[in-house]
Length: 383
Image (cartoon, rainbow, N blue to C red):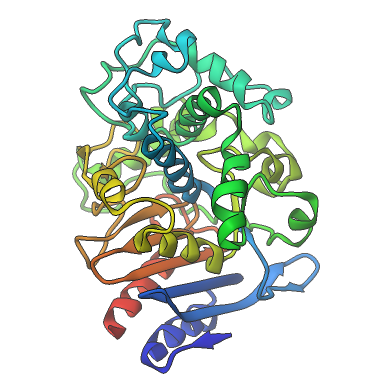
């Protein structure tokens, strides 16, 4: 492990998370101005076997994948192969069905397309057939007028953006991440993990849900938290429908199942070390992956405010989270993407920071993950 003395408080917070019983296994990495200053890991990768978390132990990081998918698409923009203002149907003609002729690539990247759910249940047999799932979405009508509102496209984001990428290049997001990002930069991350990586991937422990049978005492009936609790309890809510189809829970072990780890869903499919995730953001802010003007334009917020799916305020540029209730940050120049359960990828060009955090004890979806936020705050406190 490595921790620059300037960041000793980061190590203290990391160790305290374990001492307080909040972690099972985890890793945290930080680059400052291209220099690796923190690379920590500890705990157990598999609670059933007692397998230790090692330096090269990767973890499934859910929606941290969305930033990688955005980067792949933005590289196509730089090559003149995609225009984010163009209709999706210009690259994917079948998408125009259901009144979606005017939906743009920008709408997909910023969660404005009105397609946060796959209308019909996706059978397990289709989980590794991304074009088949995309075809389902192409035939649907949007739930709201595209561009008029936004709502987190938890899983559909990847099938939609991924299909545009496939139509333009003939390759999947996972193939392009391997060929253009992970391979050239020697990063430990995979969107669709090979068998040898699956064998050493940390096993997630299901989050321990709190009692959400009622809103906390003193909350008004129209309070946002109360509405979130209600949505979490309602299997037919937009939130649950967006998060649950395709249903990882249909497979033994859920996200630990090799089918999921291998499938490489472009919205929730990355298997990565903290060092690999931080390295990706280091490459973004240093200009190794995108031109500075491309990244600056991608970080310009397209939406900001109430999210129709998550109910809290969210803010998105082109595939990247910006400061909001769901991406709290001590710096206005920070961007990145969190993953369900608590993992996070983070870049801050204003401070020269790139951060990655992965773990296997899933945090509760309603309360979020204070472990990651404390670690990030300790980095800023160390500057």
